[in-house]
Image (tube, rainbow, N blue to C red):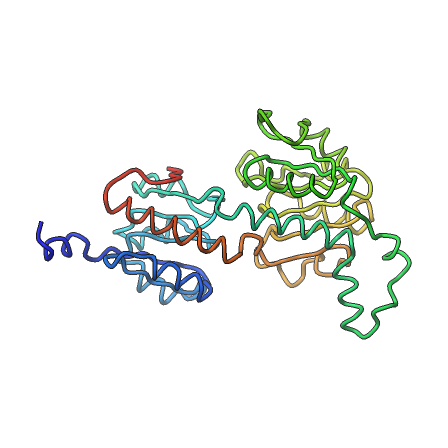
Length: 326
């Protein structure tokens, strides 16, 4: 094949990043892309640009904005929806399957960042970091209430219960064990060689001082921590969620936090995102929150860009994709 023929073969391959991406991620993807791949980045809320760009897009790099059958219908050339992360609950998998559109994800690409963020939330709740920060910013830094002072705790010797024991759960477990915590886990099956001790779900929820969610949102895990399970959590326990908001009955969680049945919560994800202005979670001093950012780190972005481009190359060649979901 001549050089001209080779260029014709690769013509018009286009990948669309639909996300409020940082300049670093856009640059990493653009620089890693082969010269036959046109990389276009648009903001999540820019639907005018989306409608313009999606019509001749071959690959969508998807993050959080739900990718529905209606959006797929605007993309006659679409061949791959590649989740820049793990959870594919925001993609209409049945519609993609019916259209013959491949869906892939990136298991493990953000595991270290999510795990470190989860532990940071544990420590922030235990050490009342946000309360202390707020006092100092209001020039009232040494006026911490007695209850806030008495509420200070340590991760060492506490029991951390991991619901889910994939790459994120295992990494959280290693970090917590290094702090001196007692680590338990539950999963669909017991894991050979696990560093944590296995418990059934309900036993883990009752026993753990800190319950940490490390699993995807599926029809089977939707509101896994329902009102009954939240009620059986150990008095004074802490909930950490860096997975998906739908795993938890949020109303039950709010009630447990308001009543002090639970000591606190560290939340990176919510039932509705962005978190509604009227959410009572905003007013609870025993809650530490972040804006679905646990996965973000420069290292994650580097791994993300590398894998996204790698699958684009495999798609163009007609070779099997990495981490294909459907």
